[in-house]
Each structure stands twice: as C-alpha cells, then as structure tokens.
Length: 312
Image 1 (tube, rainbow, N blue to C red):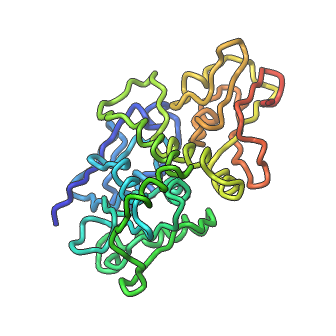
Image 2 (image 1 turned 135 degrees about the horizontal axis):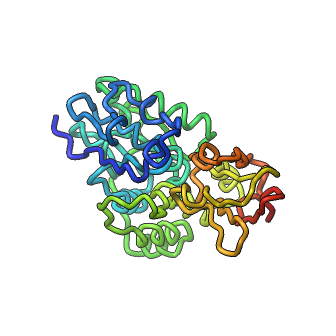
C-alpha cells in the first residue's frame, strides 16, 4: 500500500551526532526492523522501514520527524468535531475526522496535549491495527497513556465501540467555539507554525514542535491538567564542582541553557529532557531531574552559578 508519509532526518538535532560519546539509543531501541542507521550519518533504510513512526515519537529533539504531515490541519479538523476521532490514513475507509501517518508517531507530548487544546476526549481509531504489520504501535500507545495517566485519550479497538458522528457545526456553535480559551490557544499554536523543511546548523537552537505543542497546552490547561502535563517537564541542578565553563550552553540543542549575564540560565519550557548536557559536562556537574506532579512551582526560568543549585 502506498504510504504518502516518510521519515525525515536531521543529523544536526541528533544527540549522537552533536556529541560522539552520547549513548542515546531511543530510536534504535524503538525500531523493530533495525532500519535506522547512525554510524555514517543519520538515515533510514526505506526497504526495511514499515512506517510505524515510533522513531519520530521517541526522539526528544526531532532529529527524526514525519515528512509531509500537517499538525496544523489535524488540530483544526479535531477542533470542529463534537467527538473527535483520529485514525491512520494507510487503511481505506476508516471512520475519522482527521487522518495522518501511522499513529505510532503520537509521542507522549501529543497524547497529553491534544485533548487539552481541543478541550475534548480524543478517540484513536485502532480498529484495523490488528491486521497491520505495525500492530505493535497499539501497545506503545497503551503504555504511554498508562504511564502518563492520560484521561483524555481513548483507544478504540473495534469499530462498533467508536463514537463517531459527522461534523454538523452551525454558525452559532462555530463562533461560540472560537471564543473558548482552548481553541484560542490551539489557534495561537498553529498560527505560529512555519514551513521549515531545511536542515539546521549544529549551532542553531531549535525547540521541537511537540515541545511547543506541550507548552501551548500547559498555558491553556486547567490546574488539574497542568499537573498531568508537568510529568513531561524537567528541572536542573548544578553540582558544587561546576566551574561555570558554560560548555553545556553550546551543546544544548534547544537553548534551554544559556549564560547571558555571567550566570547559567535554565528555561524549563525549552528543555526536552534529552540529558545531553549531563553526558557532555566535563565535570559531570549537571543533573536533569524530572518534575514530579506535586512540584507545581517548578516550571519557571531559573538561575545558577558555579557554587550553587539552580535557584529561582
């Protein structure tokens, strides 16, 4: 079957290419077909790849992405549906309000953010997955939802269990929807999307699309949803042995670390938790710490110097 979507790679975002001693193997571990090659540049063997897109889901820096997929369009189509359904487009006739590549592309950031931004429960139509060569993505989605305790996503394995209705939005309902805060946040996010398509230089700082999606959901979310979203954020600590060399700021692919005024600045919203700074630090003086649900105060920009912990 023809697959209109393909894998796009950008070695400048790959942790193994930014630092040759990095031990990151997220994409390699996710690929059952051993289709990903990193020894001589980052590439995907199209003969082996089945298009499950799990490599794109697990890559924290988006060194691997889905080419020709429009997240802007997906959000728009799901927003106007009363009970939105998302499905893979590789199977003909699947009932859905929006379709795209194999649903293996849905990272934890996607799964936790999209329901917040559309302010509705999202149904994933997996009714044909059992007959697909990528049937393993169902388990990946189940594990992600369980680990994040996501309540806004429902996995539907049978078409008989799908709550699907054609879109019937009247003019009054449409304008009422436009005034809702989640819609405005989603619109702000999608309006900020740029075409991209070019590889970046190694020195360029770039925030992955799925992290921008998560940040948009955090801004729009309720207190309860923020506690769920926080599980995907990280905080930082500097050991007393830090000598302030600031090499970590150059190595960070997203710009979460900077040193504009002689002190190290860390921006939680720009950190993807890739831990490259930990691996690269010559003094082994940096620690990336996942933010726990009860730490509601921790999502801030913070400052540290060579002799203290990162302090807000």
